[in-house]
Structures are given as C-alpha cells and as structure tokens.
Image (cartoon, rainbow, N blue to C red; front, side, top):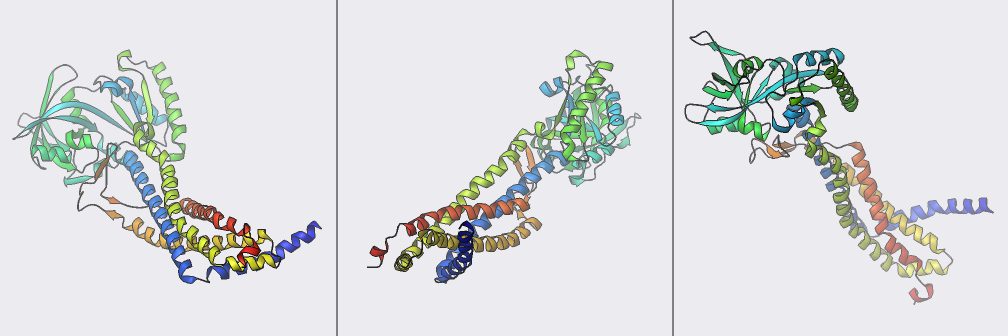
Length: 438
C-alpha cells in the first residue's frame, strides 16, 4: 500500500509541475513585473555584498600591506606612552630572523620633535625605517606623491657632516609650504638628554596613508635617526610579514614563545615593560570588528531588500488565487485534494523565485564585473581618498564578489519569497467548493 501511494504521488508531481509552470505565464505581464522586482532586489543585494567585501579587503590590505604589516612587536611602555627608552635589543631581531626564516621583518624607531622651515614651525612625529627591509614588509615607501624617495645622504656639509634626506606627509608639506628639494630643520630631545638638531633635505612627499602621519609624519633612515637621537641600542617596533595568512595566529603564538625565551636568556630593564606581540586585528580593532560584522550587515540589509521585493510576489499570488477562485472550486469539487492544490500554488511561487534568481544573478554578475574592474571613482570630490577608522583609503571603491555570497543571496531570496507565498497558498486550502462556484 505504501509503495502504491508513493508511486501515485510521484506520478502526479510532473503534472503539477507542468501545470504550475503554465499557470505563471497565464498573465505574462504580471509575472514579468514580479520577476523584475525580485531580480532587482537580488541585484542590489549582490552589489551591496560585493562592495562591502571589496571595502573590507581594501581595509585589510591597507592595514597590513601599506603600513602596519601582519604582526608588530613592541614593549609595553612604548605602547602605553611612546616611551623613547622602551627599546628592544638588535640581537632580538637577529635571533627572531634565525628562528623564523619564512617571515620578513623590518625595524622602526620613533620620536617627537619640532620641524622648522623658512616660513613656519610645527610639531612632528619622526619615524625611522630601514628602506631596504621596509619595502619587503610594506608598500609604504611606494606611495610617493611628489619627488623621488631617497632616505640616503643628500650631501656633505662644509663641516664634513652628512646631510640626510627626509620624506614627509602630504598635509604636513602643505601646512609648512615645503616641496621636494627644500630644507627642513629638526629639533628634539635626544636620548642622552641633549638637544638634538640637524638640517635635512626634503626628498619626497608621501600620499596620505594614515591621518596622523599625514599631518605630522617625518620619515628618515635609521642611520639619520641614530645621529639625531643618539639612540643606538635597539628599536621601538618590529614589523613582521608572514607568507601564509592562514598561519598568522600560529606564527604569532610561536613568536610570543620565542620572546619569552629571549627575555629569560637576555633580561630587559623593568621600566620598559614586557615585549608585546600583536597581529593586525589587535592593532586595528575597528577594522577587525567591521570584518566580523560585515556578514551580518549583508544578511540584514539583504533580508530587508528581499522582503520588500517579496511584497510583489505576495501581491501577484494573492491576485492569482483571487482570479482563479472559481477554477480552484471546480478542482476541489471533482475530487482534487487540498494538499495538491496547495502544492501547485507553491510550485508557482517557486518557479517565479527560481527565474528571478537566475535573472538577478546574471544581471548582478554583469554589473559586478564592471565594479570589480573599474569601481566607483570618488577622485573628483576626494582626490586623496577618504579617512575611516584611522586609515586613508583610495578614492576608487572596487567590488569583490565571493561565490558563496552569490549563493547565499539567491537562497535567501528564494526562502523569503516562498515564505511570503504561504499566505496565498493557505487561502487555497480554506476554499469551500459550494461557495466559490456560485
């Protein structure tokens, strides 16, 4: 008996599917409008997911490739208040490199000072890097707006001392009215308590990278920094780049373990605090939080857009059921079971959502390809990019569509539309043949 019932059900399904497909084209204009509304909603969800993913990827790229790198190593006192004396020995860097040959590292030093040009003076943040190693870790030195990046010796003064080149931030150059080739005097308190001062040549002006560095940043070589600050026994920051981002946390844990061994073998002074190893997510929590919330944003916004578009489906099916009430009554009167009637209406909704998913996916992919290649260009109104969460982003916002985002968007649209169709479908099983056939 069960096998016979199952065979009966399977034999009727193809007929129901065929009839349901024919029914949605009984009023082609209405069906096309419904499909257009659902497909448009799906296209909006696809583009939103693509642009948000592109923005988050740009944020990760700026947070890691441009300036921060994947992992940074500091001492706690430097993190707390930029303590000039909170340095790590150069031997630590060499031993980390020997222990982890697959990572790339670059040292950095920092200081505060006063910069003076022919017209004005202002406070600056001095950042010293090893140009050769820095280019292996980040792309900071590639973002030059004017001039030629050169952190070497500009010339030799009359007293026989070398005069070094500097690179400064874009806003700082504008505020001080300084161009490449101009001279800049730096005055600061050196590590030995003396007043450090020297004359430098501005070699280049960087594009906006970080708001603070753009307004106050002065970039120099480590050799120039050591001559200015008389600080040669260590570095403040170690930027670390990993080859495999999937192993980021494992490498971070291994570096922490290695640092614990180093501090045991070569103890540090207590005033500088313990070494702290942080990855880019810990260094840029705003970016990390946005990455965590981005999927939720896509789901919430997508659900709202699809729900609004599904009102068209609801209206279409309600009208279809209303127009065919007499027809449904006849089917019930001649013995058609109500569950088959319900299933037929659900199949009609399913076909409408399926066609909408196909149309919306094709149109969405075509439009998304343009955004992935060309993006949205804001360079006319924001030539230097835009500032968000302490970072400067390029003025061109490009999309990046993940295959799973496309699948999830289509599934969400079909589920929401099928749920919306339950209301008109439920009306069919409540019909009374005697009443609707009058």
